[in-house]
Length: 241
Ligand SMILES: C[S@@+](CC[C@H](N)C(=O)[O-])C[C@H]1O[C@@H](n2cnc3c(N)ncnc32)[C@H](O)[C@@H]1O
Image 1 (tube, rainbow, N blue to C red):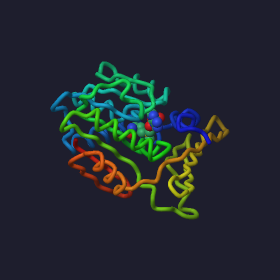
Image 2 (image 1 turned 120 degrees about the vertical axis):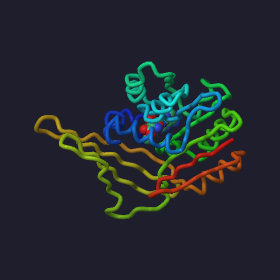
Image 3 (image 1 turned 90 degrees about the vertical axis):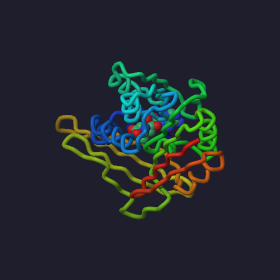
Image 4 (image 1 turned 135 degrees about the vertical axis):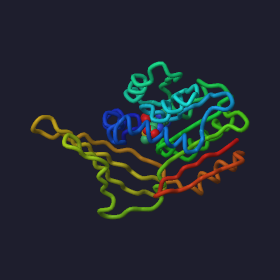
């Protein structure tokens, strides 16, 4: 099975921003997310973006005044982030998110891990290791923001085929195969080249975890105030140390 890194390299990173509705839309959506929740720097101003991708959270946070460390394994997405970040205070690091603490101190005001990055981890143990490092890297009163799709409800038969996005040059279809603790995600990207279509395909696994699971994990390691919601299967957690 391809690793997450190989999957992004082979298929996803070339179409990631497009899949999200385009770069500008991805940035705007997250500016709105942070503004609505009044997430602005009030303490150290240090933010860490785990699984930063092309910068959909790093750029809004830096524009809001945070000094951001952006961590991701995917070189192409990080190059895209660098291209768009201009003079903003964003330090870009190609690294596994579970090893983020090799590059940061213990005074973060904000750590974010958004849009399914958490459930890309290979195991619950790796997620638990990440959570422990997150809480020790936050200053008192610092916040941890996590968002991911709850893949625990099982889809069946034709519901497992999902048209992610299409336009006249690209058709992105996803097929989901549920396993006990994980879901195999098959990404199929058809791209037009002149009169011909080519198919780029790969698959990877995501963890199936619920809001209740993350609430329990975060409270067991000492997060005090855990504000979590589910909207159309999408879990949003804002936990305070
Ligand atoms: C679904 S994307 C989300 C990107 C960004 N946070 C956003 O909202 O657009 C997941 C990102 O996590 C990265 N990623 C997944 N597992 C990782 C790991 N173990 N270490 C570092 N990056 C990882 C991928 O390369 C990808 O950029």
